Amino acid sequence: MDRIERSKSLTELVTYILRHSIVEGELELGEALSESKIASRLEVSRTPVREAFARLEIEGLVFAEPQKSTRVFTLGPKDVADICDVRCCLEAKALALAMERRREDLGNVLTETTKLMTEARQTGQNRVYLRLDTQFHQQIFDHADNVFLNDAYQTVASKIAALRNRLGSHPDHLQKGYAEHLQLAELVAKGDLARALDVLDAHIARKEGSFWNLDDGLTGRDGQVFTRRPTPSPAPNISLRKDRQPSMP
Image (cartoon, rainbow, N blue to C red):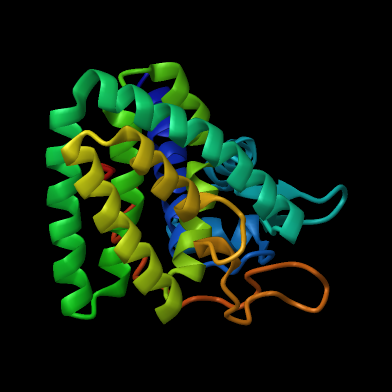
């Protein structure tokens, strides 16, 4: 039983580390992943790495090329547009439910999050700001009180965070997104659902002038997007050595 539990724990930890590396930008989109090199770096066998690849493929963060390597996901313009369409449907419904069921609580947490975002902006902590951006949108789903809606969002949440961390470091994206977060928090606090939905749509839809459509040179000649690696944050400091009890932050 201990061996089974340890194997399960190692798989979860390797999955967490690789997911973090993809989302935060330590690994470049489209980058080939070596099972043996990752296993050696993390001081584990290849089995938990292989199992982590399988989990991340389900999440859409990696893909296996037949008879070749496993690679970090890539997206073309249509993929981004499709994700935006899905996100608009899910997040608009989540916002409507959250304001119906727990508007005051949602208003409070979004207001607090925007205060932290303001502090991060003022101190130049862009990576902290972008994590708070992800937190802001997750809080809408947390307050919708619909586990199935949240589960549906989780199928694209990691990809959205990965894209946000690549797009969001651009000054135009930071300023536009920040202003819209402030608007959303204020409108939710006031209980103005109609205007909040309009701001949310402008914020996340793939349309002229939207966050996702600003030109910052991240589109490659081959039609793939986000080919430039962002400045990565440090990988989580987690030891997987056999003489230590593994734990996840």
